[in-house]
Figure 1 (spheres, helix red, strand yellow):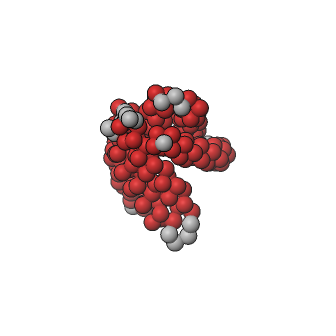
Figure 2 (spheres, rainbow, N blue to C red):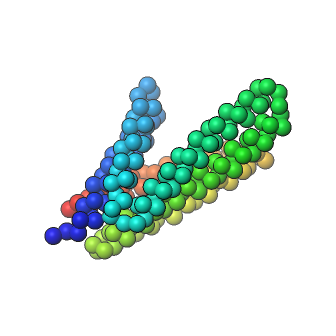
Figure 3 (cartoon, rainbow, N blue to C red):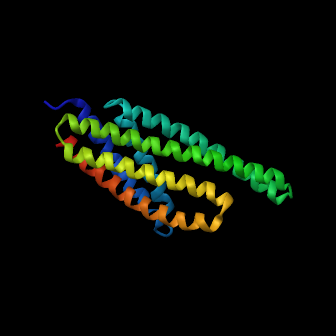
Length: 197
Protein backbone atom coordinates (compact mmCIF):
# COMPACT_ATOMS: atom_id res chain seq x y z
CA UNK A 1 0.00 0.00 0.00
CA UNK A 2 1.33 3.43 -0.97
CA UNK A 3 2.17 5.89 1.80
CA UNK A 4 -0.74 8.31 2.26
CA UNK A 5 1.65 11.29 2.05
CA UNK A 6 2.19 10.66 -1.66
CA UNK A 7 -1.55 10.59 -2.36
CA UNK A 8 -2.05 13.80 -0.35
CA UNK A 9 0.81 15.54 -2.15
CA UNK A 10 -0.26 14.17 -5.55
CA UNK A 11 -3.83 15.43 -5.18
CA UNK A 12 -2.65 18.85 -4.03
CA UNK A 13 -0.07 19.10 -6.82
CA UNK A 14 -2.75 18.17 -9.35
CA UNK A 15 -4.87 21.13 -8.22
CA UNK A 16 -1.79 23.38 -8.24
CA UNK A 17 -1.08 22.23 -11.81
CA UNK A 18 -4.64 23.05 -12.93
CA UNK A 19 -4.58 26.39 -11.09
CA UNK A 20 -1.23 27.36 -12.58
CA UNK A 21 -2.45 26.55 -16.10
CA UNK A 22 -5.57 28.67 -15.53
CA UNK A 23 -3.41 31.51 -14.19
CA UNK A 24 -1.23 31.39 -17.29
CA UNK A 25 -4.33 32.08 -19.40
CA UNK A 26 -4.65 35.59 -17.95
CA UNK A 27 -3.71 37.09 -21.34
CA UNK A 28 -7.05 36.04 -22.90
CA UNK A 29 -9.23 39.12 -23.45
CA UNK A 30 -12.37 39.52 -21.34
CA UNK A 31 -12.10 36.22 -19.39
CA UNK A 32 -8.36 36.29 -18.60
CA UNK A 33 -8.82 38.11 -15.30
CA UNK A 34 -11.47 35.66 -14.15
CA UNK A 35 -9.33 32.68 -15.18
CA UNK A 36 -6.39 34.17 -13.29
CA UNK A 37 -8.42 34.56 -10.09
CA UNK A 38 -9.92 31.07 -10.39
CA UNK A 39 -6.44 29.67 -11.07
CA UNK A 40 -5.03 31.41 -8.00
CA UNK A 41 -7.81 30.00 -5.79
CA UNK A 42 -7.42 26.46 -7.20
CA UNK A 43 -3.63 26.65 -6.68
CA UNK A 44 -4.14 27.88 -3.13
CA UNK A 45 -6.53 25.01 -2.35
CA UNK A 46 -4.04 22.57 -3.87
CA UNK A 47 -1.18 23.96 -1.79
CA UNK A 48 -3.34 23.79 1.34
CA UNK A 49 -4.11 20.13 0.59
CA UNK A 50 -0.39 19.26 0.42
CA UNK A 51 0.44 20.49 3.91
CA UNK A 52 -0.07 17.06 5.46
CA UNK A 53 2.48 15.46 3.14
CA UNK A 54 5.72 17.29 4.04
CA UNK A 55 6.85 20.23 6.22
CA UNK A 56 8.06 22.20 3.17
CA UNK A 57 4.47 22.61 2.01
CA UNK A 58 3.53 24.18 5.35
CA UNK A 59 6.43 26.61 4.95
CA UNK A 60 5.16 27.46 1.45
CA UNK A 61 1.71 28.29 2.86
CA UNK A 62 3.28 30.55 5.50
CA UNK A 63 5.28 32.37 2.80
CA UNK A 64 2.11 32.77 0.73
CA UNK A 65 0.12 34.24 3.64
CA UNK A 66 2.92 36.68 4.50
CA UNK A 67 3.23 37.60 0.81
CA UNK A 68 -0.50 38.38 0.64
CA UNK A 69 -0.19 40.67 3.67
CA UNK A 70 2.85 42.40 2.16
CA UNK A 71 1.02 42.80 -1.18
CA UNK A 72 -1.92 44.48 0.56
CA UNK A 73 0.48 46.85 2.34
CA UNK A 74 2.22 47.59 -1.00
CA UNK A 75 -1.16 48.41 -2.56
CA UNK A 76 -2.06 50.79 0.25
CA UNK A 77 1.36 52.47 0.19
CA UNK A 78 1.27 52.83 -3.62
CA UNK A 79 -2.15 54.48 -3.37
CA UNK A 80 -0.86 56.85 -0.70
CA UNK A 81 2.24 57.70 -2.78
CA UNK A 82 0.04 58.35 -5.81
CA UNK A 83 -2.22 60.52 -3.68
CA UNK A 84 0.81 62.48 -2.46
CA UNK A 85 1.97 63.00 -6.04
CA UNK A 86 -1.47 64.19 -7.12
CA UNK A 87 -1.77 66.55 -4.17
CA UNK A 88 1.68 67.98 -4.89
CA UNK A 89 3.58 66.49 -1.97
CA UNK A 90 6.68 65.32 -3.87
CA UNK A 91 8.60 64.25 -0.78
CA UNK A 92 5.74 62.06 0.42
CA UNK A 93 5.39 60.52 -3.04
CA UNK A 94 9.13 59.73 -3.31
CA UNK A 95 9.24 58.31 0.23
CA UNK A 96 6.14 56.24 -0.48
CA UNK A 97 7.61 54.87 -3.68
CA UNK A 98 10.84 53.91 -1.91
CA UNK A 99 8.77 52.01 0.68
CA UNK A 100 6.76 50.36 -2.09
CA UNK A 101 10.00 49.28 -3.80
CA UNK A 102 11.42 47.80 -0.59
CA UNK A 103 8.21 45.91 0.17
CA UNK A 104 8.00 44.75 -3.46
CA UNK A 105 11.48 43.25 -3.03
CA UNK A 106 10.28 41.52 0.15
CA UNK A 107 7.29 40.20 -1.81
CA UNK A 108 9.61 38.83 -4.52
CA UNK A 109 11.72 37.04 -1.89
CA UNK A 110 8.59 35.54 -0.31
CA UNK A 111 7.33 34.36 -3.72
CA UNK A 112 10.67 32.70 -4.39
CA UNK A 113 10.66 31.00 -0.99
CA UNK A 114 7.18 29.66 -1.71
CA UNK A 115 8.40 28.12 -4.99
CA UNK A 116 11.55 26.83 -3.26
CA UNK A 117 9.58 25.07 -0.50
CA UNK A 118 7.13 23.52 -2.98
CA UNK A 119 9.91 22.23 -5.24
CA UNK A 120 12.15 20.91 -2.46
CA UNK A 121 9.29 19.24 -0.59
CA UNK A 122 8.05 17.62 -3.79
CA UNK A 123 11.54 16.57 -4.87
CA UNK A 124 12.13 15.04 -1.43
CA UNK A 125 8.97 12.95 -1.71
CA UNK A 126 9.84 11.94 -5.27
CA UNK A 127 13.27 10.76 -4.14
CA UNK A 128 11.62 8.59 -1.48
CA UNK A 129 9.78 6.69 -4.20
CA UNK A 130 12.79 6.50 -6.49
CA UNK A 131 11.68 9.12 -9.05
CA UNK A 132 15.07 10.84 -9.18
CA UNK A 133 14.60 11.95 -12.80
CA UNK A 134 11.54 14.07 -11.89
CA UNK A 135 13.07 15.21 -8.57
CA UNK A 136 16.07 16.67 -10.44
CA UNK A 137 13.66 18.77 -12.52
CA UNK A 138 12.28 20.24 -9.30
CA UNK A 139 15.79 21.20 -8.24
CA UNK A 140 16.32 22.88 -11.60
CA UNK A 141 12.97 24.72 -11.39
CA UNK A 142 13.68 26.36 -8.04
CA UNK A 143 17.18 27.37 -9.14
CA UNK A 144 15.84 28.91 -12.36
CA UNK A 145 13.17 30.70 -10.32
CA UNK A 146 15.91 32.03 -8.03
CA UNK A 147 17.50 33.61 -11.10
CA UNK A 148 14.14 35.07 -12.20
CA UNK A 149 13.45 36.62 -8.82
CA UNK A 150 17.00 37.96 -8.58
CA UNK A 151 16.59 39.68 -11.95
CA UNK A 152 13.18 41.03 -10.87
CA UNK A 153 14.71 42.50 -7.72
CA UNK A 154 17.56 44.10 -9.69
CA UNK A 155 14.96 45.55 -12.09
CA UNK A 156 13.00 47.02 -9.16
CA UNK A 157 16.14 48.68 -7.83
CA UNK A 158 17.36 49.89 -11.24
CA UNK A 159 13.95 51.33 -12.09
CA UNK A 160 14.59 53.95 -9.43
CA UNK A 161 18.13 54.66 -10.69
CA UNK A 162 18.54 53.88 -14.41
CA UNK A 163 15.19 53.25 -16.09
CA UNK A 164 16.50 52.30 -19.60
CA UNK A 165 18.76 49.56 -18.20
CA UNK A 166 15.88 48.33 -16.06
CA UNK A 167 13.72 48.04 -19.19
CA UNK A 168 16.29 45.79 -20.90
CA UNK A 169 16.63 43.60 -17.80
CA UNK A 170 12.85 43.48 -17.52
CA UNK A 171 12.61 41.93 -21.00
CA UNK A 172 15.23 39.34 -20.04
CA UNK A 173 13.32 38.68 -16.82
CA UNK A 174 10.06 38.10 -18.69
CA UNK A 175 11.70 35.56 -21.01
CA UNK A 176 13.44 33.67 -18.18
CA UNK A 177 10.24 33.77 -16.09
CA UNK A 178 8.23 32.30 -18.94
CA UNK A 179 10.69 29.41 -19.24
CA UNK A 180 10.64 28.92 -15.45
CA UNK A 181 6.82 28.94 -15.39
CA UNK A 182 6.60 26.33 -18.15
CA UNK A 183 9.17 24.12 -16.39
CA UNK A 184 7.28 24.53 -13.08
CA UNK A 185 4.03 23.45 -14.73
CA UNK A 186 5.74 20.43 -16.30
CA UNK A 187 7.28 19.57 -12.91
CA UNK A 188 3.87 19.80 -11.18
CA UNK A 189 2.28 17.60 -13.84
CA UNK A 190 4.98 14.94 -13.76
CA UNK A 191 5.16 14.96 -9.95
CA UNK A 192 1.45 14.47 -9.41
CA UNK A 193 1.38 11.68 -11.99
CA UNK A 194 4.24 9.83 -10.29
CA UNK A 195 2.74 10.26 -6.82
CA UNK A 196 -0.75 9.19 -7.87
CA UNK A 197 0.40 6.23 -10.01
